[in-house]
Length: 453
Image 1: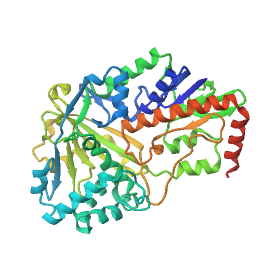
Image 2 (image 1 turned 90 degrees about the vertical axis):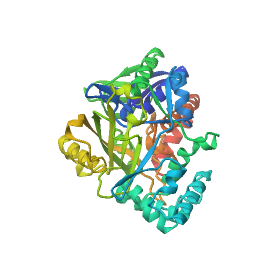
Image 3 (image 1 turned 180 degrees about the vertical axis):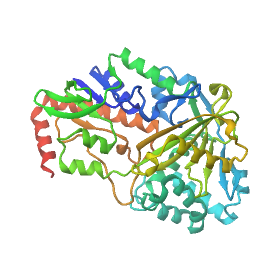
Image 4 (image 1 turned 135 degrees about the vertical axis):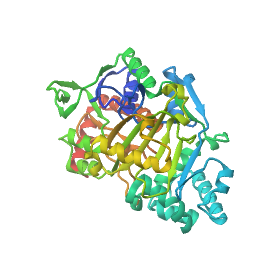
């Protein structure tokens, strides 16, 4: 069985790895000049590190298992990270029980309700019963209206903008569950980890391992059209060449996948188009000196146009950055937000200006380098009362879709992506064997899908 995989991020790479281990012939295509997708690395100044901020939790068993297979798990560095909170024009520590007791945003009763609400949310084993609720409705039930207004609303607005109003409660349930996973496994504190060399190290090893496993690898290979034909699934690339496979898996975001596959039914296209994504604009700054010892600074001020401040050098040994500091300034926005059309200089100036409000001592001479990353389709936002699960096995014979919108009740991170790929690689491998053994079954299923019933 020859599988073609469109998309060379962690999802596509893990799919290729699993299929190759099962004895399949695999070809993997990435449209960018380098593999990795949102997990790819780049150079800022004279430092090579992740394009976007990533961290591994000690409880990320799927990712850690993959790193072990690649011989990299022993190279992980583990730290307990500190958190800050920007409130009322002041930066407060927010890392432990004592910090929380001293935190001025909430009064003692509200702090008790906040803590009890978090504990209750972390203990829920499934989202049954909250799927129809918005995050506002659920968090208000858990902690009360005053806690929501003071604490939760500013954080949700920083992450989701006004879209928090329709975002489903499952978003916060999944977030809280992941952050408390270590405590359920017996650790007192969640451990934050990074790989020596960043994701560039993992991607290089993964790419070489795929090559060693016989996977055909191609970068700068942008798929333009995917069609099922009597001789197999034909993938036409932007350079005009065409390759044919027994089956193809498209890992592109839902709207882009719909544009690649013109044979999909109108119902399938409609479902793909109804997935509501948030994109990201993220400024990376290489600084002469650290700003703080907080890995994450949460922001409760709506006038600061940042989701938060991620100071990677508060977690990673600064030797990785040649004794400088690396800071990420993200903003999550809708795919059609005008910020995507602004110049790098405008975005960097605005985001750095916002950072100076939190850290007034930061001077222009302290910024050694800066780069701007843009991605329009990053986070599929769950909408309260509406479950949108695009088709994985489409009505088009031999064409499958798998992307972040298929992560149910989870948060978007590399661990969830690896788990998604492993689960469905096994399923698709078994499905292909079944359909090869009984082709009349396959033709019947595709006819049923195309009927729209």
